[in-house]
Length: 166
Image (cartoon, rainbow, N blue to C red; front, side, top):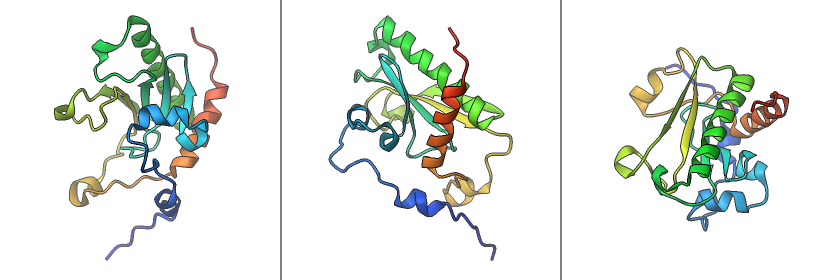
């Protein structure tokens, strides 16, 4: 039998989760007042970028409007523009910090589409050639090679080095 060594994984397992009382995490996280604990890497006027606590890949970001809506059609024109700017910024930060070979960007609108939280959010998922292996297929297990707190540090450090882009 082969052994899988993921020594960093214990940090992830022991990391604090959303408080049990936080029934609406996307409105509760910004209110915590601690972006590191909330894993928020950037705030704009109308939306924010946060690391997904249950990522598909390391660096999996969520772009979330501050105002709680369920569908993109409920956003104002200004909110849509701001959210798209956050998505573009998220892609730029991932490129600078993690150098992925590609990025998946998308929304799961409605529970039938995979939306598990009824607060609109976009996914920005870094992808690397060969990042999918046998683990998700055979064991329904994802292996993440970096602790989420380390990913937060890496992304926030890259964010401050990005040139302004208007």
